[in-house]
Amino acid sequence: MMRERKIKLSFDDAREFVKTASRCDFDINVFYNRVIIDAKSILGVLGLDFNQTLTVQYAGEDGEFESLIHRYAVCN
Image (cartoon, rainbow, N blue to C red; front, side, top):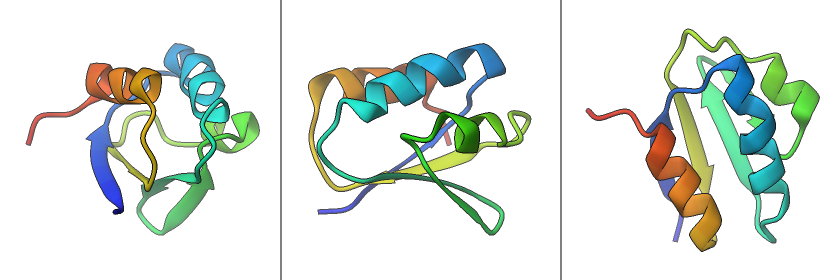
């Protein structure tokens, strides 16, 4: 089942986000506008516009990653 969450990151948050995503054994993608980035790529994530709300899409379960996503979640 594909999950999707809206998050907001800062430049400083990017390292922790990528580090946590890299431990997951499933694909994680970050979307904004028409750009799709692999969440496990530090260069890709650092190239994002941190002023924008980002969409994270993933299909697996990991408690640490879920906790991180919850911390950066944007309320709609």
